[in-house]
Image 1 (cartoon, rainbow, N blue to C red):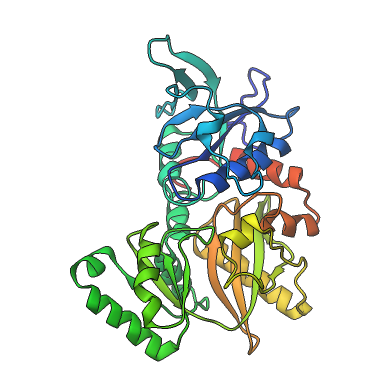
Image 2: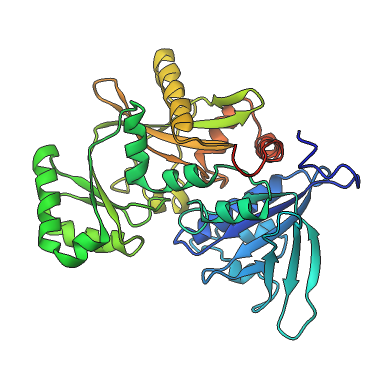
Length: 382
């Protein structure tokens, strides 16, 4: 571990700020994920500071009460429910020489909360997982868990992710992109563009927000009659949309984790078809608790190949820390990469920790390894 990043002179424990919530539509899942991480962090080894970001962007000091951060029935948690105050805000200095966090409320003297040694950003989607928070932390000179600015941005934007993967020779599924200006200026031309794509690759198609996650805003479209509604649903989450063809085969996932000697791949998982849903959507993932099979029932040769491809995707996007790589194993036995998640879910039923549990890395050890990797890594160009 780098002595530059660890406060060894005072003898105190490294302080981890767990940042969660955020402005994206994945706000609630970020809260759930952070709750699981807060439960797992070794409090004898680290001091912990929970910081929530509300849906309107306020950084709030929150209660360190993971039990309040879980999904209750079909009710999703929020930072607003956990915040110590409706108006108080947390400020992280962008001065690299000063890692102190300050809390202030209207009419009160600001309160210093102490230095932060590493940030664990448990944010999903835009305004957190997409390089924006990572850029702020780079300016502040604070180490953080996970991918850097470029790889976070690439991992969030499905169009450029596929462009990067294709340039590295990784197999990707056919896709088409509709940019905001295209839809605003000439919807008919945009519809024809998609119809031509369907004519080449067939129906059904998946219409998705280009920079979203957790399967939110995704619609499976069987013909032109359902296209406009699907586009509007995707655009509720992102003005830029991506359209992908249907690949028949099995959904296979694989986790990548940064060790001292470089990235390693977990045993893969199989996501079986869900009977009550058109595809593995948000409700299936988080509400109805659809579960994958770990390890995936594939051959040793297929396991080795998907592990190789997962690490290749990790390297192609210049990732750090962790990645969950999602693939289709087509009926002809070929793997096609669908996407990577640079900050995959850590909820109790999330596949990433389950795959590493089966690979011999327990949940607490997984969290510890991610923090340790962040502390070893310098900020800035690397």
